[in-house]
Length: 255
Image 1 (cartoon, helix red, strand yellow):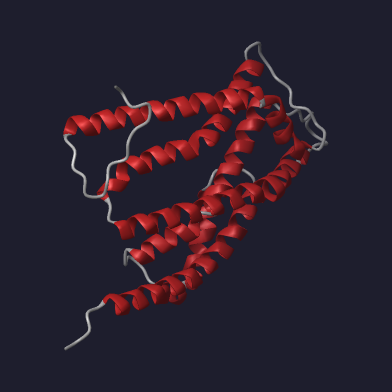
Image 2: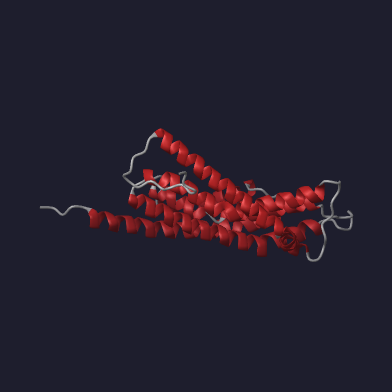
């Protein structure tokens, strides 16, 4: 009898290549089912999603050009939202497949990092939607308004809005990236503090390199980058102290 859901292997349990391939196929199927279910839910609510994305426009309605644009735009928004809904299940399947190859201590650390990264990304989405996106839309849709008859094309606006939200969400992942570098020994809190000014320049360059064609979006990505970089320095200090303490408690006592 075939199992409806993949069984996670134990830490010390061995399995052959055929078993691993069968587990991988089952986990891919579960992920695709979750994606299809997420898409179905998102499509059923895509009207509310579109109204939610339209709020930064301050009452202005996007326009469509072409016969297929309304349909394709709604499908794109539903697919993106469906992927976001299915992402926890997809990540859980990836984790279930990879976790047996990791030590228990590493497993707990990675779970903590994933939880921390999820909270940071959610905070980035909230910041992007309430601060960065409205400011960017206001600047861009009023720039040289005395010269142009500015109309907002639906497909372009929703692509821009999604790009801004995802970009700001990824910007908020900076502390996780820095902590991983510190944990791997690639850098240290001392080095980060010594090169703080260089770090600020790097954050400004990263903000310019991120998606966003206007100075407002760039500025609203640069500010949290600098704040998060400073927070990353002090988080790395706390991480190093914890690593030193852990090493002392696990080291064998001298005779």
